[in-house]
Figure 1 (tube, rainbow, N blue to C red):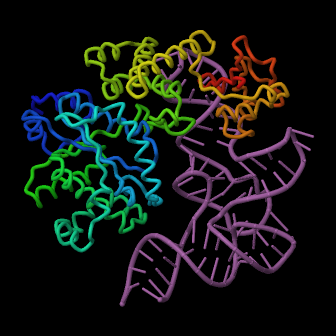
Figure 2 (figure 1 turned 90 degrees about the vertical axis):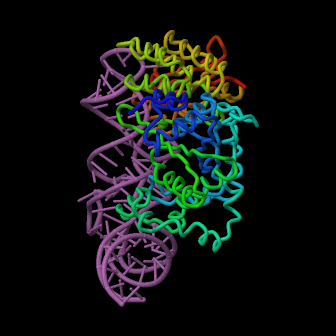
Figure 3 (figure 1 turned 120 degrees about the vertical axis):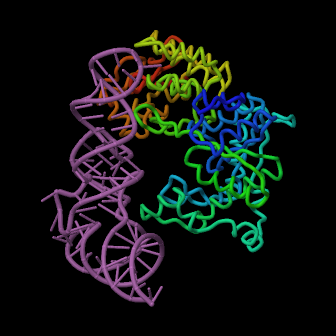
Length: 417
RNA sequence: GGAGGGGUGGCCGAGCGGUCAAUGGCAGCAGACUGUAAAUCUGCCGACGGAAGUCUACGUAGGUUCAAAUCCUACCCCCUCCA
């Protein structure tokens, strides 16, 4: 592969964002010529995004940092269909109100990563419901349907895999590909968008959009995909005990977000630093080179940098400090997830198991008791010896808090409130 | 429309009248070992209850039986082949 001259491609390739590109040379030239508008579509199936979408978000950030214009396309229209890529089952259909609420939540996340505005490299956000909702079926089929053949559509993984596994694929979902291709065409026309980026599972959808642009408008458009990010041991990113690792703080406290990154596997540290932080590559190389237990220092940097981007510098520093106190001094810290309990209730006494459930450290009473039986539960750093233990006001420590721990890594504070 | 196969716990997948809260695998949680890592080993892994036990669960609704995930009926959904 030849050297890329544009800052954009060098940055994307060097930092590990590239999986496939429809035309590297061409894209390189385009990027050298001036600001390029590139978009990524995000579904509005939930009111927050999780770590699984972070590569895509960072992809847009890298674009902006390289002087180009990122375009966030919210799938207000396509969400009503559901992308069949990588899934065996149809999504349940969402109502318009649900989708509107989800879009509002997602919008806030992007403000952290991108600068929106009217300048040449300012990010913009669009919603494909604006053009999809009003589509007239017959004109649409006549104008665009003729550019797609079933023969070709059936060869795309999103469709092929589903059929091979003998899983149902509805006509509704089958159309997703066409609509996403049409999105690209609309964005090219409306916002001079020439590039679509996405995860590697989007390749088929993206290629269709590139081809539609060429066939309908004779426009040269580009597609670029990022690799599917898994951990070294092969697991998909973004799941923990508590569920998904959400980017929204309402869904996941800063401390737990920081902890997620702190617990990165050794082999992933360098790759994640390149993908998920803005640290210069030479600094990443130094951190990555740390051996043995020293790699932990690199993990702390990773955690703090990623958290700073997503949640703000102050939140990141506080989480780091709390972690230091909890893990290196065996104490507790302000930023641990905290629940409140009424003074009167505590005076009366509360069963430990119930407290663990309320603190979110166990999903049910039974689970909390099993945790205790297994020796994994601690109260103020002392093992809970009995499932029947009652927690009372005496258990408050000098700072007026009770520290609950499930295993060595999950902690929570109970305060009187 | 016809014929055949199938719908089981977060997922995959056994069970095919009682011993089934349901084998096994994956995922998850905890313990040991470590470096808040990985790998490995051990235990746990529906809810409520101190326990005995009670409840909820095998597509949906009924039925047969002392007893049903397992049999019958109807319905819904999926797959394959035929028209």
